[in-house]
Length: 261
Image (cartoon, rainbow, N blue to C red; front, top):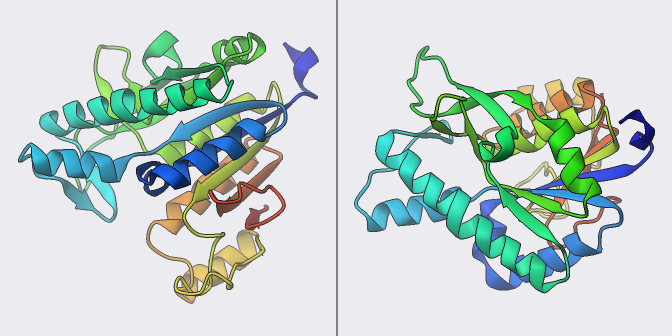
């Protein structure tokens, strides 16, 4: 399939906060559909899963921003990620003339993973990606289908695994970079990586490995932004052409924060 290497593919990850707001989601999907070329959408949905857990009296446990996924929680996130959010998003894209198809990693064996080994913390049914089936994704794309990926993988033995959506986006982008010219875009509520989270005008236009180390040491970049940027560098090292962290309200590849090696 080397003949399609020059074809452009944009992998977009959108956060759960955008998915919750009806007007924000509508505008984001309009902009996503308008992106030129082939596209893959990866979505989160943790806030919706937490709300449903509360309604069902199932405790949500988080450690350093990561969800502990016990037997009850894997059922919840499967319902929310693979069902409610995924299918609503697919239906909304279909209404915009985009031939979307909703998938988990288990569908067509698209994303294989292993249950995260227990070290200091037992995360439960959380998956670490081992393989992305890029050839099947390429067939879907070349058939005119826009994959919409829920943050669920599987272990090949019948067990679904909760997997970080940023990681899934990064792994897909990296795997597809051998077949396409790939751009990876992380979209969330803010206009980019900020020096001051309360000031939307404090966007850092570019981050490389050297400045990233400094920003972390100074406490400017911390918490949930660290794994997002780690995933960005991982994607670049696997051949992704560009990685941008930007606002879902613009989905503009020329704004936000550009990550470079």
